[in-house]
Length: 419
Ligand code: CTP
Image (cartoon, rainbow, N blue to C red):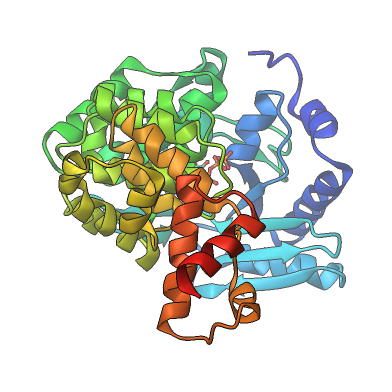
């Protein structure tokens, strides 16, 4: 790793003047209060990797376990610079400072965490910086830069994070890391692929071991969904799923989930679709994954009502699909008229070629503007009512079949049939 560059030089070159000024304010105020502040987490990792980072997290160490020191320090900075907005979260012993130009700094009191049981929310107690860094996911994320006092502007590396950065390795700090927090399995894969790193072999073994016992089968929730969506939104989503599959970690989503050829082909097909959709690509990929396994998979991940309905709709129609002999657009429209494009795509992604393409073709045709609307019918002398709607639908079916191609043809067609 090019550690030949000193921390000062990196802060100087890679941080914006705005961020540097904020860190200097932290440094001065921490000195004045007799506290020690550290830049921690992703920002330090990115600085050492020659990347810029504007998402700065500061941890404040108090005198032997003193609580709320981050709030104290943030308050002090806000008192000295009245343009800064100060917000305290006393319960979490954290604070946030926002400058008028939109720059934000988050401060947290150094703390240690105990997991009462695997996957549970941790219980928290204020602690030294060493313990604060020890509770973190990977050595490369457990580095700090001291911002004041005798060690000011020095790199703090208790766990070999700098060596792992130079060897491009994602490594946990202790064997229980994935047992305590299974979302870290997804994070390991994300950091490895995002940074072009390898997951250390022993860390991979810890992943496989933590998953194989079925310990995480019942674990789910918001955090797991968020980390999974990060992976599915990344350009490397397929490599991420392949890696999770190799580590048998798709089991965290569902015990029977595997990336078989059918699932992979469905996901790749979905990703190649260029229709404008209301649902983000990552969310559709997640729903396709859930459709590959039993309905109980959706219990673990909090899904919104629309997603749940979409999945149920597709699931309920799925067994009937092989019996659909007529794949013409009007026939598909009779079944799917009230389906959103996203639901039709999910359904198509469960099929093979050429059936899939028929559904895609149907979607394209369905999105064309209608040749006839209610105003046209009124001008022809029809009164609003059930027949009115039926005529519009019949005309649209003829349009989907290709029988009607212009508005004039459509008007003549209605005249001949209904007047
Ligand atoms: N962290 C952790 N375990 C988790 C989530 C987060 O230990 N399950 C720690 C990591 O030390 C991480 C820090 O909390 O560095 C902040 O988390 P986050 O903002 O998610 O990650 P960053 O490292 O800042 O990465 P990114 O570049 O993706 O923002």
